[in-house]
Amino acid sequence: MSAIEKISFDQTGLLRFITAGSVDDGKSTLIGRLLHDSKSIFEDQLTSITNTTRKRGMQGVDLSLLTDGLQAEREQGITIDVAYRYFATPKRKFIIADTPGHEQYTRNMVTGASTANLAIILIDARKGVLTQSRRHAYLASLVGIPHLVVAVNKMDLVDYSQPVFEKICQDFAAFAEKLNLRNIEYIPMSALNGDMVVERGDQLNWYQGSTLIDLLENVSIEDDINHEDFRFPVQWVCRPQTKELHDFRGYMGRIESGSIHVGDNITVLPSGLTSRIKEIILYEGPINEAIAPQSVTLTIEDHLDISRGDVLVKTGETPRVTKAFDAMLCWLSEQPLDPNRKYLIKQSTRMVKAVISRIDYRVDVNTMAHEATNTLKMNDIAHVGLKVQQPLVCDDYARNRSTGCFIVIDESSNNTVAAGMISPAEE
Image (cartoon, rainbow, N blue to C red; front, side, top):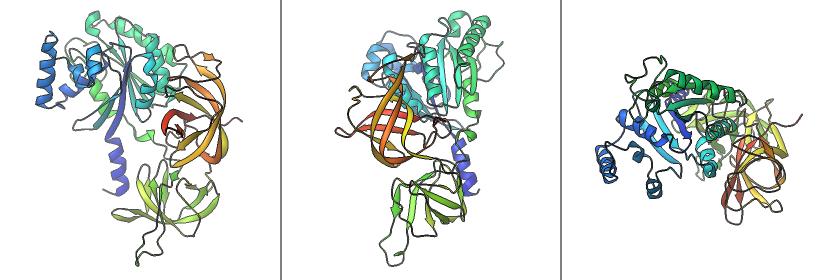
């Protein structure tokens, strides 16, 4: 297997997904069921949660305890923080983020969704599509999650009714038409009993689609990475201080999108200097081609002034380089936005000072209505304008998630206070 084939296989062999929904929709139980039925938990874990279940006076095994790891979560019976879990089947490896259902934890879902390939939105079959269901669908659309699964859970409590399932699908589809959601699948299930999670069960014979695990194992994520636009943010300039490599100068980093060949013409941004790729080096040695998201060392034919934070792109495929741009911003900090102060923006490997020059509107994540405001509080999402002290290489987030996102840092405390997604430039 070639290096290119191997990296492609590695990426399609790992799926990152999140679960989201209203409180008590069964997110943690669903993950527990996935882990349990796929034989991905240890015997001592199963014994521990069985004992905890009995202490609570409950029968059987409360599988939600596999993910509700914080003591506060267990006491309240809800998920507060983002709980990450890992499991694997013979076909694929998985990283799960179980995100909270409460509106005040919007920031947690945005955090968990930022790197996800797929989102599972759980809907209680008794309650149908709720405000929280629409809110999570909007957030999934906002952060550009490519694949969405609507899991209609607790079908056992509505006698596994096909009309109930179909009505929920119709209601959700009508709302989803307003959003930029490309691929939506609908599955009826009972996470408590295990129907349509890993095993099909005996109660949903009218449903002819895949089980959840079949869908997760087989969903194609090959096209989720932008393979067209070569973006290589320089993370480190390698200058070995040895006699043999005294003249070596390599640029180390990860290819965020696209591909590169030896001999390709490249442009260094923001300076605009040009050169040609001389070598592409992996830890195994030189290769002729590399693709996202490989980490490589590049050498070029000319001696140019290149440093950490610069971005290499293919000549003729230059993105925006600007000191002012618009973005959707999710405010993460308990301290409100101060429009009169400067913050730091970290985009990929570049850090610059910035001000939020204007707030166009805040989004009501329950109704998607636009509201006027002059500040932002924790969990607020808004469309804003930013001005930066030094130029940034800006890709639209919808086209390139890796180079279209950034975080905002309070330089006095060094805390991350916001996450942003760059909006298209106005014509």
